[in-house]
Image 1 (cartoon, rainbow, N blue to C red):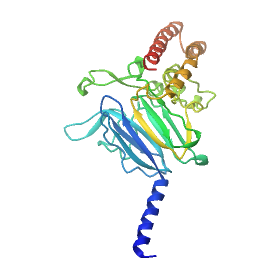
Image 2 (image 1 turned 90 degrees about the vertical axis):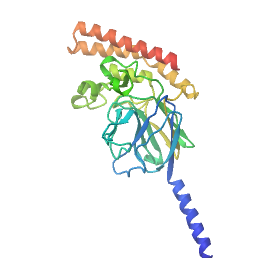
Image 3 (image 1 turned 180 degrees about the vertical axis):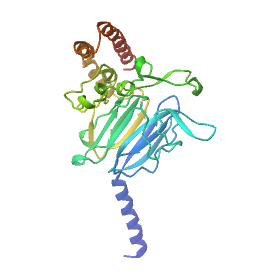
Image 4 (image 1 turned 45 degrees about the vertical axis):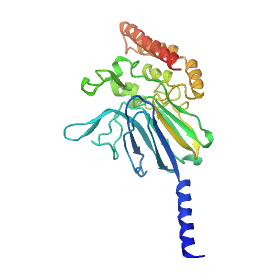
Amino acid sequence: MDRPVIFVATILALLCVSEVDSATFRLVNKCRHTIWPGFLSGANTAPLASTGFVLKSGKSRTISVPRSWSGRMWGRTLCAEDDSGKFSCATADCGSGKVECDGGNAEPPATLAEFTLNGDQGLDFYDVSLVDGYNLPMLVVARGGHGGDCSATGCLVDLNGACPKELRVVASATNGSRGASVACKSACEAFGDPMYCCSQAYSTPDTCQPSVYSQFFKHACPRSYSYAYDDKTSTFTCASADYIIIFCPSPFTSQKVLALRREAAELPLVNKTMMYIGRKYASGTSSPGRVQEQIIAHGASIVVSLLLLLLFL
């Protein structure tokens, strides 16, 4: 065989191997504002070629990801450079001082999409997590995969306005948000209580139960992680898939949204909320007056989340 032919055949073979050994992530911005996606590779996983970029409203960008990659990605909001050229964001900032995150993690609160590609039995594991709080609606859709449960997952509802007051992040008026709620903290971050953080005496699935606050997240976003031990309803698997990650997805773009609505309707949130508050009163950690305040406050949160589901689903 002539050398030119061998050279061309080699190049084609390398291209085919590269295609087989990589997945694609297509990031789509359906928000009415610009976002800045960020990426962080997991331990012992090489960083991606780009760890952060700008994505304007209505635009999309496709990146190639090794099939062996594990890590997380998120969307930053309300970003700008100061007079010295330092880049920062009001939500989910990664602390690098520039658009590229360069190994920086998302500062909570942040909606996170987490991936472990080609894991156990060759399956991809993926989820959308609100364990570190929430800042943007996000939908992850697997395409072209097989095996496992290649279902869409995510959080389709804008929770910032409905966020309980004690969890809200209110941005300064100088960044154009005019004091609006721009993110929703986790109870762990807001209070630092081991009961909410699943730490110390609450570090096992038996001792760390869903809280009123995690149930607020779970009710609105039933397929997302709401607290540390929320694996059974929140982790999905698929083999050899490519992924579409949509920020601020329209809740009417997929029939799978109907399944999300049915699942949300089946969650006995009110009963669990009352039981949780009752346990705190019985243990002596809440006074009768405080119990009444909690019932009123969290009852209002439940009503707001129900209204959101009716409006958006």
